[in-house]
Length: 530
Image 1: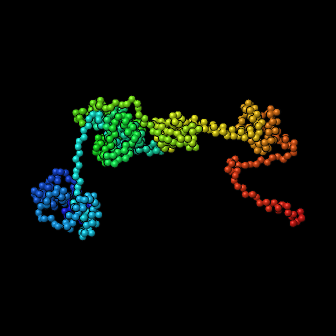
Image 2: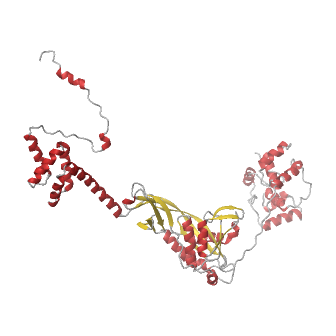
């Protein structure tokens, strides 16, 4: 079996490591990071006692690759025989110069460059060696940032999975704001991270604290920064209007420098581990109520990092006096959306349909919504108010909207028949008036008169209606009897009703005429003479 162990590289392949563990029970710590005490022991035995690598590995129960790695990372010269020359040695100046200019150049690309210059080694061995010579980035040092009470707050969103509400799957987002000096927290859960919820989180935090911090640190999220080139920032104009209302300063951190707002990042981790993990809740309102209780309870009792002698609750009591006062006028945080009503009396908002009066179809309206209700406006006139639904595909309706539409549709169908009858038979108006006085169903009277009009014609029906009125019998049966007496007096055949389809489109359907030559067979004399 092949063993892929490279001398001097400090790397051991998985195959070799697995076989050595199978046949050597003393290497349980192979390829595992060692404690500082064990690494110091390896270095002492190698350099002070001059033990060989194999002896150290046997006596300490380590894999020899682990011992080699510890010695290589220490950067101390090897004791004993000089290191054996490697195939890569002649190419090291070129490799180091290339990596100095291009630190992130991949080992495969560098191997191709070195192979073109005559390097005969294998790619996998070359990759292990390059790992030893690749320049490591310098560890960055950070300043400890301190702020004054009431000076700064840090803000961010955090994602906490999803909520299933009916047929909708909504993201559960937490708006988190923390005061930099006292570490006082505010957390509010929403079903999205839209700009309106972003502003609502600010307003609710200010209300809970009774004041406003002077500076707000943000990520470069879309709700704050629309465009950025270095230090040139184009802010969201609505956010600037919001900041002007509360007299605050929005301050985005540098790109990819989340450490500059580490207080809110640690607060989010604290919320995940100390509050949300393993928590049960029925709905969003219950979750926010539990969050408020946690913020005012266990989260406020923890130690304040800026003042270790104080708790967060005590530190916030001191910081609250340094916050800016809330303005007298509230800031509107409602969602506004311009919508167009289609041919049905509904407007679409946030995955659901909301009803409007039927006379508003084909018009442009405005939807104004908060977290509890949805209002539909025509200018400044409120047309409808509905409870907000966070489900999907729901029709939220007011019964009066549909009842009014259904009533108007019914009346329109009756009026169409009445108008047609009145134009063709003027005397029918008086008959309908007398029929209504006797509490007769006008719909059935109108329908019966229209059928007689289609069969006998307007002139005959007009005369029959006048006869029925003269006899003071305002009923379709009296009109029908009068029509039959007039027909029999003139000795006319009964009229044949023409059965046309009800819908106008069906009346225009093409009809294939019957062949007339078949009738010629009737007039032809039979061959037998009969």
